Amino acid sequence: MTISYRAGGIDDLEAVMNVMARAFDPAFGEAWNRAQCLGIMALPDVVLCVAEADESIVGFALSRMLVDDAELLLLAVDPKRRGCGIGGGLIGQAVAWSRARGAARLLLEMRDGNKAGILYRTCGFGRIGRRPDYYRGADGTHYDALTLALALGETIG
Image (cartoon, rainbow, N blue to C red; front, side, top):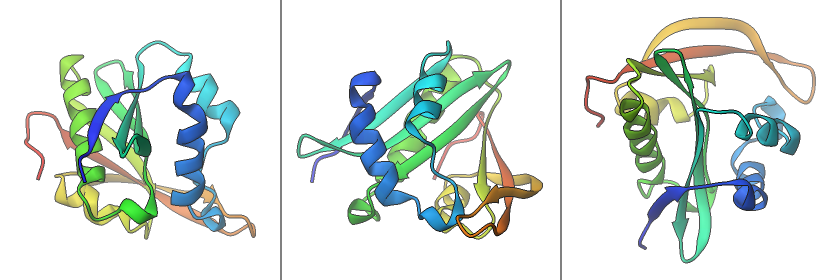
């Protein structure tokens, strides 16, 4: 399977929403809705990167600049395509984009206990904070968010 990466746009939103629906368990309240995605994508210094295989979008990363840091807002890979290096490739694309804009760090927040933490640690991210009760699940349960950072002078795994 050959994976290619490219800048995405509004025309890719339907496919991105489909990947997000498959990738994020609704029990945890982590997925964004269409209006949230459209709103952030309209802002300056926001980039959508999509991963394609067999002419279909199989993953994406949404990032933005925040003064001298960059933030990885969303990262998702179709569950059927996990374990093929797509997530690491998308992180690599976000790192390259962030470095090109002069960011000192790439930040992200994830739910405590999210299995994606393994990927982030492998790529060199370390925990710098915790936000209690940040996510609210479908049943009303609250989950902490962990704030992770990658210094952009480092190389990723």
